[in-house]
Length: 543
Image 1 (cartoon, rainbow, N blue to C red):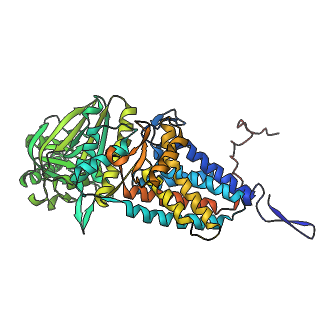
Image 2: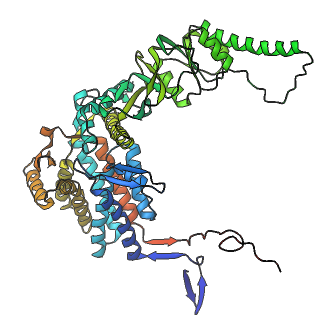
């Protein structure tokens, strides 16, 4: 209970049970919590990074070395540690890669800051130094960026393979990612725009990873509604309906008085006639495939089957939107307004069995702006990890298509920026110089960790790296496979410039925010209320 004394009389300020930590105590606790999060993902960095097995409260297992996934699956409680999880999430949402690097760098920045705080340097001075160092680092990054063609498949594939190194890195997965992103990329003012949602990822355990393939269209996880319908339609004309092929119920209560059996028959015949009219409307505009977001009446199914029209019902709204982008069709919300110009086109629409399920494949679209990657693999775990690898590859290819500039990986960029920052800090006044030097040292955590995870001596590697960069070998980095320092350009290890920029921004901002906290006031936790009448829920005795 926080309190103050006035003339010997305690004055209660905060609610009973509230805890408070101030000054160095609060800073050290926050930094320790954030550093621990960084340590957790540190061993997962790089091509030789190790995997983590995460078991949730239901016993479900996730095996991955993807930083964002590891932190998302962990149930982190400490508020400063939660901020580190947010860093990974922001990095993943923004650029899709570099999550582990961002968290490790943020942890190292805080570790270096803690040393400076212990030397009685005020956190505000450290934060200002970090901010200036981050701005300078972003400037250096822009200078070091290598321009590439936005649609240069070779460069895009190299970036995709680098993002998947240490995961399920396969040449054909990188090729799939490049093909998929270039297919959905749309030209805009002076460049390209890519909405990664237009690349649908469907996964199904079975077969092997080599059977993963790109479908130039959309795979809908629904089966054909009626056994009498064709299972394969070539040269498909597709009607996309956001309305039901059913007799709609009125929104208000209505009664129909029927006195004679003929009236009942007339009523039912009228319903059938209405459904037949609906189906004829679909057939008259030339549609031979119907994909409906809502229901299709059994009688309507019968009439559709008689006209050899393939129909799928209760498709998800997102599926319908992607089908519109893939086939060039238009989603119709009122059947009366359906016309031939609203129909989408595809070479084939076919129901196929995938594992135990029947799915509908709409493929062979002329110039689809939405595509599907169908991931196969031996087990659920492999399929899930392949999906995460593919997500990273798709995101980095998207990053380069939108901002066609890349930089070598392997810690080469971080080491070069560290070297330049150290030289620049010499001209700074006072204690800010120490903060900028600390920022430079923290950047070296990337090549150091890559070396550690590859089983190398980090001290030997960092000394060699520094010497190479002093000699002007800009692209010298850690090659985890040959256990040496080599030119990353010759190894064709590249990363998007936008990923590196986001790493510096995310890590420096998170570290600065945590560093500036000098007071932690935590409210008491709510007590869980038990059942009435005591701990075991017995009813109290009544005398």
